[in-house]
Image: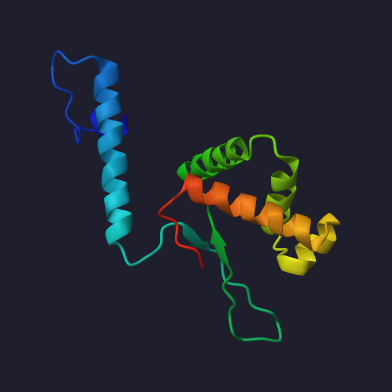
Length: 140
């Protein structure tokens, strides 16, 4: 709105106000994304103010990552697709939660209380479902 009011953006006569606002917002966000991609500075990382202890003369900076609304929406969509791919299979859901907690192999198997055969069967089913969701994904 400010860009339209100060004359930076032009409101062509005869256009519906919502069309003008949508076009201006799209253009401004597109320019901001292009600027962020071309910039050597990561706009999503904010540095907290310097802190210095009384004993220490060296200032310390702590980084803080901000999550954009696009990241949040994308994460929610990916989680919804993941749980839809599980199809209500409780074993796959439990295994995915264990993996999300950073547990792998024997550690995950013990946390879930499964024997080796059940764990391997669930792991293979989960990997097949993940491969079906994103066939271009490269395994580590």
